[in-house]
Amino acid sequence: MFNTSFIKIFIIFMKSVLILASCVSGKTDTYLGYDKSGLIKFYDSQKIRHRHIDTVNALRVEQGLNALEYSRELNASAETHARDIAYQKRAWNFGSDHSSPKERSLRAGFTGVLRGENISETFEGEFEILQVWIKNQVSRNILFDSKATHLGLGWYQGEDGTIWWVQDVGQKIF
Image (cartoon, rainbow, N blue to C red; front, side, top):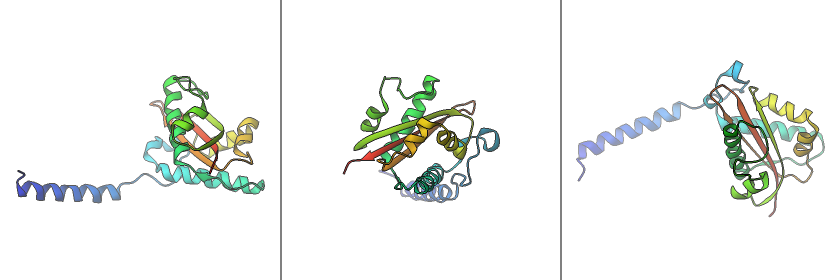
């Protein structure tokens, strides 16, 4: 049996940890890249993802297209692939297990059609990578696909500061 003193100390400790954890969160400002902002892991990943989808949607609305919704499944697929291409040291759309973007999105639980995947290896920040994808015709076509309904974004930063970005765009089938 547990000693009641031990339980009281444990409860006080856990409350302290929870209070401290609520005070210590990631930076919420824009991630500008390794040279200007350091490591991306110190930034709030949800804020980065929300800024990304807000910017993509503003650009899509300007083009007369529907806004995209955030997809946890596509995000998981993108994040897994970002880690994998960093491991492979090669920015491309195929996994080390020879999986395609479509296969990875299905594995992650996305119930729909993957419309496309944008990737990049860079030291740049969250807005710079979006500008790169918009300037590239293939990536731009994925971003402005009129059938797209959902988006996921993932990244992995290596020890040297290189960020491997992956963006998955899909069409949810209801």
